[in-house]
Image 1 (tube, rainbow, N blue to C red):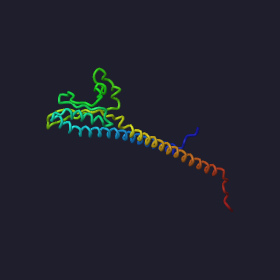
Image 2 (cartoon, rainbow, N blue to C red):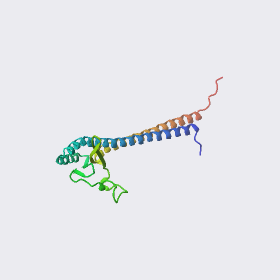
Image 3 (cartoon, rainbow, N blue to C red):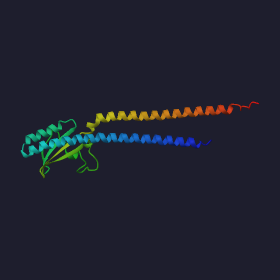
Image 4 (cartoon, rainbow, N blue to C red):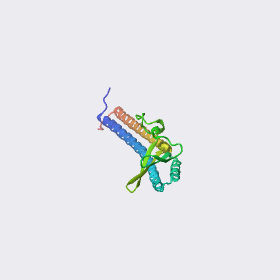
Length: 203
């Protein structure tokens, strides 16, 4: 078995390193895209909670339970929110949306605190403290349907990622074919030179 020339070894090594670098950049970009989607969902939820907290503060101070009930129902009507619960300063529920899910069914608390319950998967809890000056007068909690909110965008992102992987594969194959064609042409020229008879000098 003939040893590969040093130039070919270096070229092959450089090609492998370049391919690995491109693959690493692609994986990093995909990870950042996923993180950006989750960040967008959380920002949306925080904006909803912060907006609703202002109304909740007003209704608590005016002691209007009917408006608190309406606020909870309005929040739960948002497609990305599963349920909403409003608490007083002691953590006692004042109002909650229809079909509100208990916390122990969403979070790993109580007896089963080692894993997230089935109903809690793909869902995130957001809690907003309601302040009147420096005094806490209540809390607002919503359950964000993060998985549902990101479903369409995640599907589009996966399609883009598949196209990126396909483009990388095509680029690598194209590089291999070009390298093979250049090497074959080089070997043909070299073989032709060996077969050509040496020219005798003219007298």
